[in-house]
Length: 298
Length: 208
Image 1: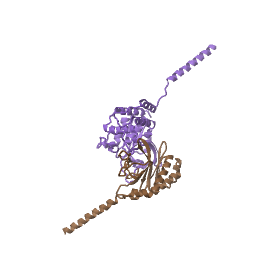
Image 2: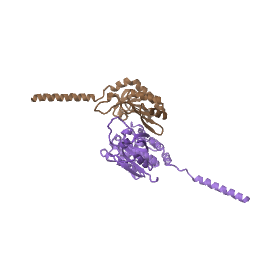
Image 3: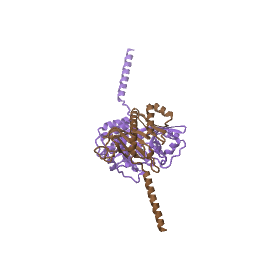
Image 4: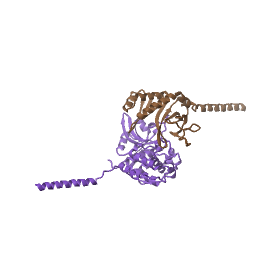
């Protein structure tokens, strides 16, 4: 009986020691966001790039870190045509933060970088201008964002860019930077590892009978981007005549409908915004819907 | 006969030229409007700026009158996580309820709205700008005035920017980036002109 007690005590001790040993091997599982922040920590301090002469390595790293910590603040500037690149960047930051920081660091250090199957080789003109954007609000000091937006605008081209394909100073506000729907979809397909689908066109609105149900269905499977006429969501003048063309990209985060009125939550220009809008108006301003289908989700 | 025809034609051409001149003159805003408007409303403008800045520091927001009768107002209420956009008639009691629900000083905000209407201010917001990498703030006011409402020409807004620090200007009175640099500072892609050290103006087709 005495021996049995000793054997039991020894067995318990062995089990306890094995537990301690096992625990010492278990490491906390890092999220993608933590991995991205650790990566940034590991490359700090960054040496000044020979390719991007006007980009300060400190500001570049600070901007990357801030983007990872809070992607909502990504900002395309007040007067640029960078909204499509910002919408893409916002989702990229949420879906693949580690891939984003590795891509951006490679781009900064080597002057070119690969993301997915796409090799980005920015032209000399944008390398000289990045870091020298003025009077665009917070974009002035967000040097990494300038590098990303300029690189995407320089690489992807659509029919709207036919007459102005080569960058000249100030072109961030011209057709050089503008994005038609098919170009936007090509950008999404190049930058995301998910399936991308789209409906609508540059000059014709999509015909969807139950728009709210349609958008909610797409939101349940992935990210949804809206291509719309921004004269209603972000009015800048009080003219009665409004241009019947889409001008802006936003990331849809949610939509509910009651009494023919929709409450939409969307991200653009450094903010998540919630606005109530008449369903008829929403249909009137909406020209394109692009969405990703995350295969891991049902 | 030919001579009479020539005289009639000359008269017609003269009339057309005169009419074009008159139309041209009537299609441009009065040259001294900005300075006169500012002088007439200086006290109210600065009172609005002071009250708006005080309220903005408590809880950020922007306000827009979206009709020419100044009866309908739109608010952008900025919280930590979301920006809410609401539209109300000024007389709608839901406006007060909504401001209260979001923690705004309802009486002060409604007084600000009333003051904005008095000077025909259609938009008020705070914008950030950067000097040597440091963030600074300015108040951006857009005025929708009848004097600028000219037929057959795009709508014009009289924009005022009010700074906390004195600004630098060139010999023509244009707002400069810095004292030593000869670069013009643009706000919302517009060149601004001096009213005084801390206040500039421009005429713009956009109110924000």
